[in-house]
Image (cartoon, rainbow, N blue to C red; front, side, top):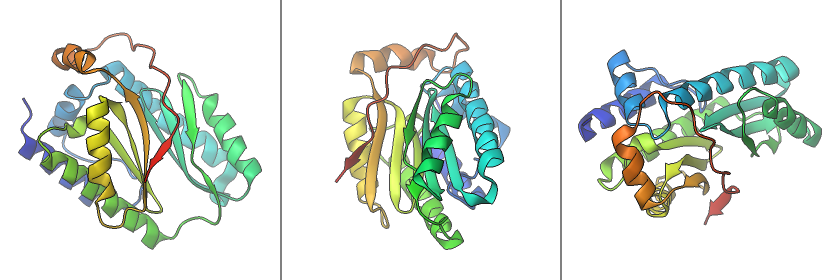
Length: 221
């Protein structure tokens, strides 16, 4: 089993490699393979999510150019949109563009109508994301590979296939990280029994199951 030290190293490497809230994770091939193996999505779904992010980001960029700053994050084919757009119309247009991307099953539109965030704000968001991940690694009751963490203007978005227990614990952890203003949960909640069932087979190539409808984004106060 991948050691917690190795996971911590991967999280730390991710922090050092990212310069913006949406920058890709850049770590060694062996670490990537290990993280994929312990992800609760099938390997096929993980690849689909990466493809969704690339295609959606490209189409949004083609539509808006420098007029908008839009981050696209896909987990189990549920897509989170964060960032800033110039108008409410642009916000809805961005969601429509992303919803038409192949394999997208649902969207959570958290775009804000406001000027693009500054480089210093994005750097701060990257730091917060790294600190949240590191704090999850330090908690022996959680698996960092079960979560995807996105930070935008001090708001932390938590995604993943997790139990209610894990969701509550991760929310508590994120809430206490310096600089976090709000925590928004976008989880697919599974039972403890389902967790036990999928854990031995995580990472096997198999047809991607249809995800359960994502719960509406909820802010944890």
